[in-house]
Length: 163
Image (cartoon, rainbow, N blue to C red; front, side):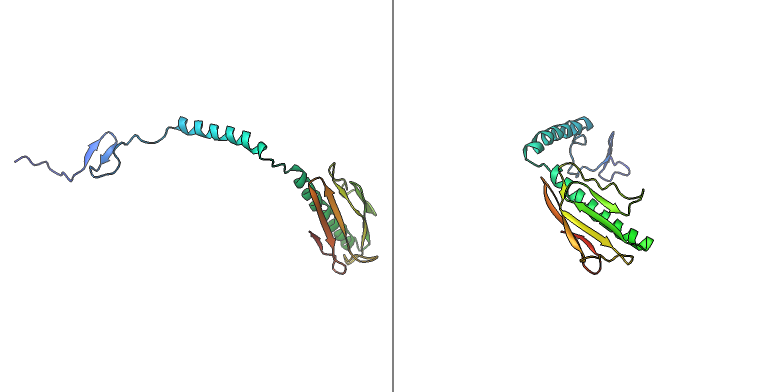
């Protein structure tokens, strides 16, 4: 009677302890790091060729949206300056790609929009409470080749919103 001590149905190999009932028959199956890198390179090349052909040109739309957010931020800046200095502050949109602040100081934003983006004409004056004066609020439209966005200023509250 040839009995092996402590034989529980497992065998020890160079890959560790193996269970003979295991579904894994080839412990070396899988992909090497080089194969994974090559597949990623092929996918990147295909994406670089395919995406420009799909017609996604997001730059003009992003330019208009960025300019709209900049204009809204500068309107809020004029409003906050009026409240912090307890004087009136005016922002004037001339209808081109620039706008001005009055009274101006060295801390005012540049008031320049990217090339190809323009605003409608509007003058907003905020009092010391941050409320729009002289006719209430209004709206200014930022437009370019990527579309247009409207920035509205509420009559009594001075709330600035982008539509």
